[in-house]
Length: 570
Image 1: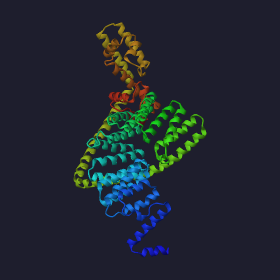
Image 2: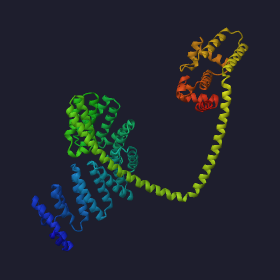
Image 3: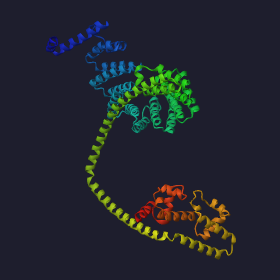
Image 4: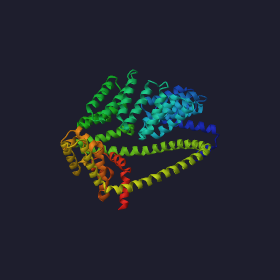
């Protein structure tokens, strides 16, 4: 403790130098690496090469030497960037993120704004591949801010693509789709057009549509992406998109078609010796799903085992791994291996809890960002509203006058409905006699037109009998069925109804049904308790809309209004 108090009393510059010396000396003794003095005069490139070949612990010595290079901000930024890039290419995303962070600090000090934007994008990608969604989101938003400030479309597209993938992971699919479609439009006018990044955007948008179960859209974008990827020999893109086509047919229960595309993917991967993990994971996962649906459980387990052989510890954060564990549990349960089924189900449950915790943190981050953007939008709107306040008063006055006018019309409508209802009630008790009178009159007119036509009289008698039997209430009541009942043809029956009932066949049937409904609703309390749909079905209509239309046409009222008023009378 006394030693450190004295150390603090030493001039600052000397203290820092001594601290560096002590740190490097300890590392040198422990790990048998060059002492700090031997690094003096080494270039940034040489120090970078040392870092690449060192363990994370040993590399700290070279980091100290690199950070202490005088007036070499550009060299330090470049070297950290290329060191990070080397780790990124080998899939060591934790170390790549670490050195991209160092590169970002150096780029900030050197005021290399666009380079800083590129570094943030790579940093976001490292975190994204390492399933550190919250940190990835921070990096992408920083990159997006710089890209938009400098109007750099290329970097804006890449940043938005990363943000889209995170929103998709968080199941914010509508927002993800919105951002991705915006990026796709930007790509049409950028250097990305028809290149790998263009294909990647199409891949992302097809994944979102897959999550939304909009399979026609998945196939549309998959075809578009394949047409772009094949001419430029972008095999990863081709494999990914063909796998999506296979997945679509799996979800549509067309297993032969699904296997056709998935086996095509296997051939492409084998021919071009594709070793990237993600496309291979997806391929074998959907093959396993297809086998499981065929009840070929051991084949499914074989495909899933190929996924397990590819996995490393860091891959446990991949949602495809989560789904693999669940499918392994289901397959083992299906073949009766309860021990293995419980084992994989337990792994699935633990991993799912970790996913949910990470998801909650990231969703909060997204929510805060969206809230901030919304706040800025609201502030802008408030400024506009201050300028437009006087127009708002005029609008309010117009609305008020409109409401008064509408209120007046509503009052008049209600009054008119009441009058119609009262008239209707007075007429209902006379409907049967009116119908008999109309029938008699139609008979008289028939006699005037065609005297002593026995065939017509017989048809009319049978027609009246069908009315008494309430045949018109049947849903299959039609001109042809009724013609058979009254022993004539459709043409002749239609003409008889036209002359003797003075209406078309459809009007004739609809009038009978509505008259029946009016009387029964008035006299049958239980019938009034039915839904409009049930009432419609009861009297022969196939839809409540059709019933309502004809009821209103004949009475001028909605059925619901009529029922309510009848209830009030009771």
